[in-house]
Length: 165
Image (cartoon, rainbow, N blue to C red; front, top):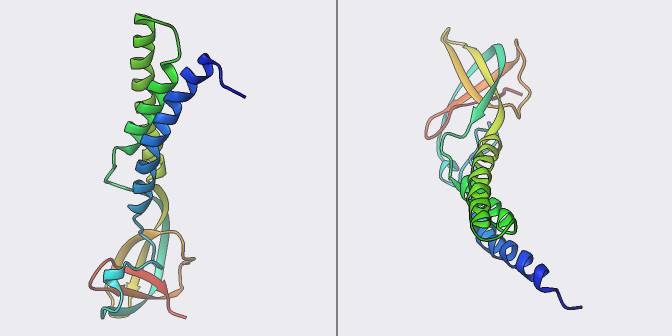
């Protein structure tokens, strides 16, 4: 029923790391950005926007990268790597393992955060009815095809391309 001293030594750092990392993960989830043609922020709702009609000339798959990293991946990875490595060795070896684990964990966490900040996008070239051509990049969550009639919605926020229906 009771944990051995070794189990306690190993479990305690993981519990502490979980208590540190959990609030960071929660806060990072709250900072979710969207480049979707279907998502409006609260501040964009109920605002008049300009609608121009046109036709899709072409589409091209792109990657949309979040340009503002929180650093959460580096901090969380470093904390978890340091905690995991702290159970290795003893004395100076333990200290070196902890530092090495924190460094490697931080690098891995940073790489994970960069990957999580990517989403599939679509670069849409639209020929407007007035003859102008526009290119808009947005998340690839709306099926748009060359020749399709679309509405280009702009003003008071991002420009969106949506089907004309």
